[in-house]
Image 1 (tube, rainbow, N blue to C red):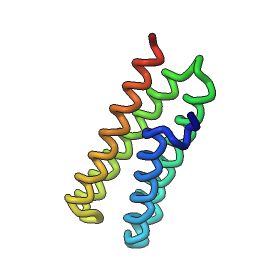
Image 2: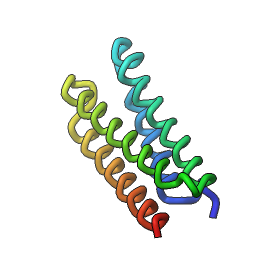
Image 3: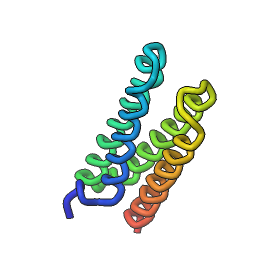
Image 4: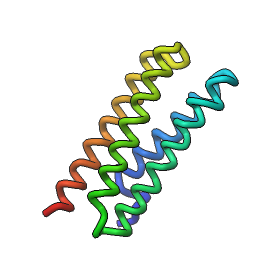
Length: 114
């Protein structure tokens, strides 16, 4: 199966698109600070997914890094909500997506450690 067809990849891409949509509505100050950090973190997710897929010997390490980045995204999103740049309903939607990514990564990690 191609990496691009895996649910974790599809969900990561959905998160990336949603982040780009919300950051485009940020004011200049937030767009080029926390908005840029959010977008960079999303691209980092894909680096770790590719590495986990193509380097099975280090898969667990890359999946752990993937999870750390997802948690960092969740923190940044919470800050965005706290400073009133994104609404609570959007925060909830994105947090559900992030939680799904963490669960998928943990399952992949568990499967890889067998």
